[in-house]
Each structure stands twice: as structure tokens, then as C-alpha cells.
Image 1 (cartoon, rainbow, N blue to C red):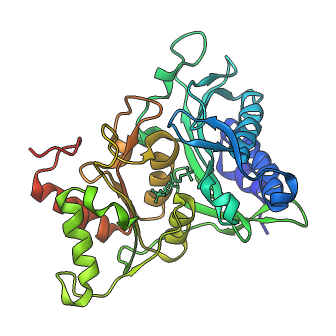
Image 2: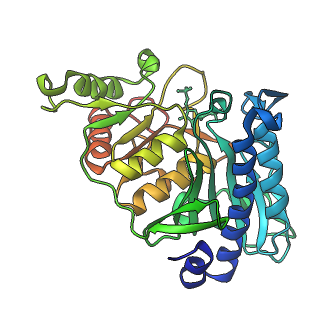
Image 3: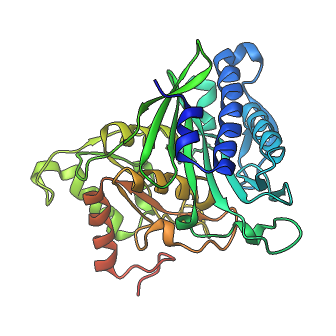
Length: 332
Ligand code: AFP
């Protein structure tokens, strides 16, 4: 039996091991709060809006504060950026790492007792000034040194990549430790299961409509096989399902909200999940480009996401290429 501490000891540098341990400790507190649910008085709205203009749940705020407090106290952490906070938080001047996180992905699921999770990404800090600034965070996903998520479902689990495959851990409530259950998580290149919010169909670009039309047509269409749909409406749960049993997840470019290319955030959701999926043998694109090659322009940037089984991701990209779609959704 290998604990997370033992795994980190043999697979990670000291700063990375320490940072992941800090994240894991905070995740245990979040998991305990979630387990108490309504009894802890944490259901409902906190009455604020985050930078994305969404209502914050009480537990979003609590989880954010827990992670922020723990990470800024870690001497290896030079700065922290949270999906819930407008500004980045500079931390320790001698730190060598930057951490971004979505404290509670899928938080609209809390009140209905469904799966939520914490997504994190760890980047190197290349000292440019006295303390970390937003510009220091704007690195492509390919620069990540670690990423993963804690999923609070029927059990609490951690999926972690340090850039050499993906390891899966399960939280043992008896010993209060994460135990390694799979040190080489892989996903199949092909699949017959896809995840998308089809209510946005009319807002999609033509290649995405063409792709989904093909899947819906099943064995009577161009793909010659029947597909199944799953949509939890929490990226964390949809991506976890793909890691466990394969599939493709999409939140594509849409014109629903003017000026926003997609719903998901590059720095808090798309990059860390792309790193995990690629390290498990899958692929990830915004339709035009590999997500981890995108140079971020803003810490809260949103982008379209298509990730999972390689065959499907390549098929979607080929349709976008054929249609001459550019990165901003325009046609060439
Ligand atoms: P919340 O964290 O605000 O609940 O959003 C979750 C999420 O960003 C992502 O995890 C889901 O895939 C996506 O929203 C679901 O969005 P729709 O409600 O538009 O299907």
C-alpha cells in the first residue's frame, strides 16, 4: 500500500511534494464539510458574485479561503490565483511555484447532493520582480509541472499528474490519508460515449453541429456506430468518468454570451484537465489548437474545450480545419 506522502517522496521535488500535500490537506477539510452538508449550514448562496458574474455558494467561499490560506502559508508557493478571486494573491518571495485553482468546480451541484471537486494547476515561478504578478501566471499549459483534481463523490479521490503519467488515489476515512489505487491511469483512443450540453446547439459553430449530428445519427450516420450521452454538468465529474471508462467531453465555442468564447476557464479548468487527459493518453483542443499550447492573455480567460479520446478529438479538429475556423471562432 502506497500513501500519497510516499508517492510524492519518490516522484516529486520537495517544493512540488510540499505544495501537493498542502492541497491535499485542504481537500480533506473541504471533503469533511461536504459530508456534513446541510447540517454544517453551508448550503445556499453566499450573496456575492464572483468575477465571472456568477452567484457564489457558501461552500465556494469557504473552500476558496481554506485553499488560499493554506497555499499562501506554504514557503514554496510564490503566488496563488483562484477562479473565485478577481486578483491574484502574491505569496512567498522565495517561493518557486505558482498555483491556480478552482476551489469547487460544479458548485451548483452542492445543493442537490451531487459530485463536486477542486481542480489545481502548478506552474513554475520565474522571478520577474519583487513579488508575483498576474503576468507571471500567464504561461501556456505545457509549462505546468503538476496538475490534477480532488473529486468529492461517493468517495473522495485525487487524480494527479507530475508530467509522467497519471496516478489515482482514494481517500481512506479510517487513516485520513490518500492511498494510491492506480499508478498508470490510461484512457482509450476510441469511444462511443460523449458529454455535451446539447441545449446550446443553436449557438455552436457549424463544425460542432456537424459533429454532434453525426453522433446522434449513430450507425445510420457517417460514424457508423451508436453513441451514448452522459452530462453531469460538473466538468470534474465528466472528466473523471472519462479517465475511468473513456469518452469525450465538450464545452465548445458558442455565441450564447457575446465576447465569451466558451464557458470554461483556461487557467483553472482547461489547462489542468488537459494535462491530466494528455498524460493518460488522451488529447485536448479548443477546436483549432492544442489547449496546452495556447498563450494566455488573461488570468480569467475562457476558452472552448474538447478533450478525451484521441480519435474523437482529432475528428472534431479536422471538421474545424475543413471549415477554416480560426481561434476566435471566425472563418478564415
Ligand atoms: P459551476 O462551478 O459554476 O457550477 O460551473 C461548472 C461548470 O463550469 C463546469 O464544471 C461544467 O462542465 C459546466 O459548468 C456546466 O455548464 P452548463 O450548466 O452550462 O451545462
